[in-house]
Amino acid sequence: MKLAIEYIETKLVGTLLKNPRLMGEVLETLKPEHLTTPKSRLAFECMVNLYDISRDINIDNIALLIEDRYPKSLDLKDKAIDFLMTSMETSPDTHNVPEWASTIKEAYNKKVTQQSILEVKKALESNSTTVEQAVEALGSISEKLAQDDTLPGQSAYDLCLSYLNKIQRIKDGEEKVARFQTGFPSLDRILGGGIYKGGTTVISGRPSMGKTSFAMQILLNLALQGEKVLAVSLEMTKEQLAGRTLFSISQITEDECLSSGATEEEWEFMMAKLQSLADTKDSFFIDDASKTPERIFGSILKYNRIHGCNIVMVDYAQNVDLQDQYNHVDLANFVKKLTMIGRDNNITILLVSQLKRELENRQNKRPLMSDHSDTKKLEEVAAHMITIYRDEIYDPETEKPGIAEVSVIKNRWGATGTAELNFIGKHTRFVDPMPSQVSASLSRSKP
Image 1 (spheres, one colour):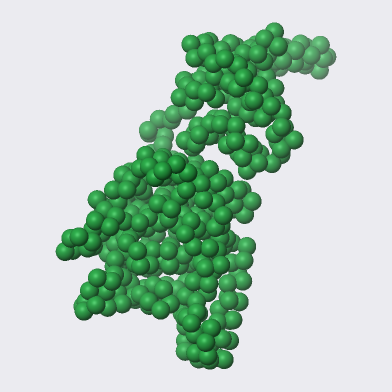
Image 2 (cartoon, one colour; image 1 turned 180 degrees about the vertical axis):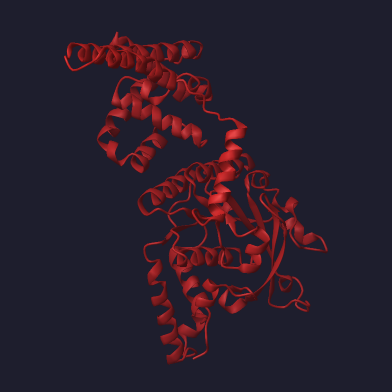
């Protein structure tokens, strides 16, 4: 019987690998623990995880997932991959998938029942076991089987009550609010307290508006608050990003450093600011090697597991290497999967995006929601959408020189509006007129 069940598991997994759309139907019946062997349970659990975060279910992704999420099961990796390879060699049979799932589940239930009966029998043979204890042990069999079929949902009343209790705990100081402060008080006020944890925040604008610098300043502010952050750069090298960060906080230009323009006092000031970054050594990371969707997802999960990085910036969406010719649908799928990874792992995503160039053909070039038409998925998944606009880019005679309009055009949990920040061009640095404790600690007093 065991060999027969293992054969059915092989056929089922092989069919699911070739027809991932059937996973939803199978998961109504089957869970990873229902499979018979450790290798098949590990392989199927990885398939379920990939399905839950909308990533492609294939052997390469399963191998990466085992390395990222199951370090204690690495000794099973080769066996699990061999099981999957064998499964792929079987002929798929979509018609029998529901029957196979039911058969595997019934075999699991039978196994649980037999094990429980043996435990009860052993207890009855013991002189120290009472009849009441034996009856209670028998009752636990049905309870265990019933728990296995627990529905995934929960009543709206219970959920609302739980959420109300959470709000009360936040008011009483027993729990932190589910937001991150960006370090820009004017922006945080519009957002309702900061960026919502576990959500996706889109930061967009046309070239030269300062999107990357703005997102990097937010990451640095969060790292200085004690958060673990990761920057995934698809455009600039890690050295370029690091240099921009250093010159921004020290307010000395690279040209000044390379020439005799920087005084000894300014050099000392820059070194002091570099030392101030020492606190972020184990909390602020930059990855410029991950370019394809799967490598980006893998990097995010790995840094989350190893270093606890719970805030990730991806710069920028349109630079993701989709390998095939640029495709709006592929980009939309990347954005969707990125958001689901963030949601399922409580990772906050800052996604930098380029706005379409058509907006420059109109008189008022301030960004609109429709300017994100590269992928409507951005509008659908974003908890917050923030645009950056500097009028001086288009009008040298502007009435707002050195002003960046940072606009919240979508806010799932609050209001929309615009914060006007000062932009120091030569340092690519944004400064809030209302300084926060974080931004004040990075400000420069002239030596």
